Image (cartoon, rainbow, N blue to C red; front, side):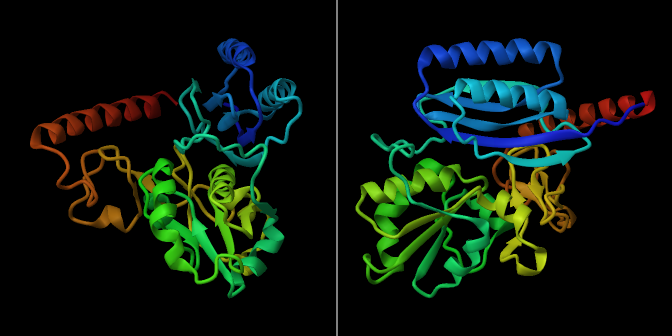
Length: 308
């Protein structure tokens, strides 16, 4: 049996995307999915496109060419990795108000954002004593890996980030005019939008890591790498290591939190049923349902294994 090698491409672009073209592109991609082994999650909005797709190389090439056509060859900020297994079940396309939800009106990253910093120059910037470094990702992402000495806003989702800026940013530096503000995220989209927010609020010297953590790990040699831990990703791989291979984390199917190999050895952990994060979140009835679901998944896995 031929072993497939799946190409996984994360992408985003801020641009003015007309509603009729959004609907047209969505329909074309769904038609294409019916005849090809394409999976992933794409989000379309009037401010642009965001998502990750997974398929064999020839299929990915066709999809990227189609996206280039509909985005008028805008920079799609592509980040590439590979897997022997599909990392999504199917292709989902969502049309939303924002491609990454911040919930603040009149933020236009395609028109006004901070200064891109290439991975090769990122280390110098964040080592500068006049630079404060902010991780714009969610708390559970930060928990499994981040840059040394970066600030964790401890947000549950990106829409909480503006409130954190209003309530806490000023406490992290003395002189607004002279301090560098360097922000980063997984692939670059959240930190790019965050720079637009800060510029609207009047902050200066704002920078963001071009291509995010994924591009940084791809370009920076391990011996020079300042990222500590693993990088959370929103697919079946859960997290990636420094070589962009599947990391050591899995997902608790009860609460959705990433759990490490060490976490799985804790007495609270029961595969598919609970982990130490959610031990007090669910009732006994919930856990019974989770246990039955896990039994069904295990049976299905055994059947598939026996048929190979």
